Figure 1 (cartoon, helix red, strand yellow):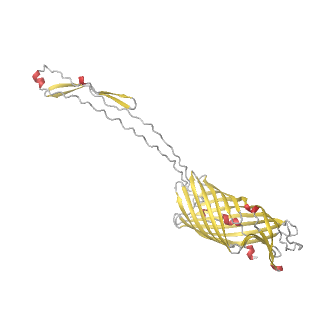
Figure 2 (cartoon, helix red, strand yellow):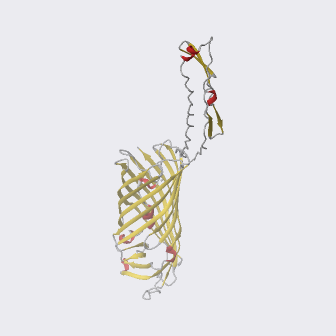
Figure 3 (cartoon, one colour):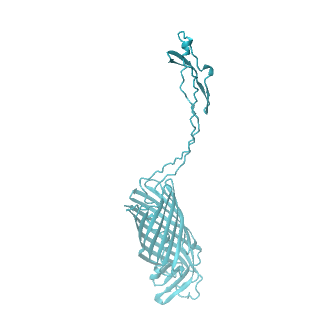
Length: 440
């Protein structure tokens, strides 16, 4: 009985129990927007100060009058046309107070007026397109519910998860073992059917510590109260119910946030878990791209499970000590489970955030697609609380043909006996809970 009862594993506990403090979803950011400002090239007109029409100077006690005219016109916005002074108006000398030829001869030789080279037009500078990025609007504090959150160096993070889950399916037993005595009251016979249900109430505590700003160590422990029901359609066979409780999972691991910048964020993590029925190595990774106040990300997880027995499945013990066991996988010592998916995390404000994920997982004996969703309220930078839910939306267990039924009765000396094959229908896995997050 002890060995069988240890097989009461809701297999999706493994699929959803990534116990890193990051299990709940980067610093708020705004979408970078590029604005290109085009400047049209132009040439500014050249403006000169007007020159005087005449200048009088004293040269060798005679007054010499120099008359000239320099002009240029500005034509159009792009070029200037300049007109040099007329040669005939370069210099005109007039006698002064009866100037004699001798005295006038002493006057200096007139110097032609310099033709001034017009200054070059200012160069046209084509400005480079301006890239303006709308700055991201940082939150007042970092959201603890961010799936990439981990504590900074020297700080602690805590996540307390109080949740409930249910794994259920309908079944029918076929291809009955011909050696089974079907005349015995309550014995199995061809086509017997029923339903299986496992309810789990649990509390899970994760604690993380920032070794550095990018590396954190994480520890986890989980306590469960479990109830298992096997209800038979045959009224001759009484329904069975078992209960169990206790610590059923411990774990420790490291998480490294290898990227956290304006656009990208990501981490990888590795853990070791001890469980009642198996020990596991877990690798976990997320990579996200920041868009405004949201982060779109992909995720992947890989479990390597070492089973303590050589099979796993669902079992129940009747009031008279008879054991019925549905084996999902037999003659197995190690299994690989794999999950991949996509999610989005969005900060609605400094206080509120939401998260949703779509996950597809391969759990060796079946494949499942499911969705997760959560809403969190962060009252201060050190405390947040939220609710979450999860459910399967498709499962290949409904077409699985490898599940087998076994039974034995130690009290009456009946050894382990093959009963027949099990057809599963309406396989489902749901859960919801409350998480409380602390940072100190």
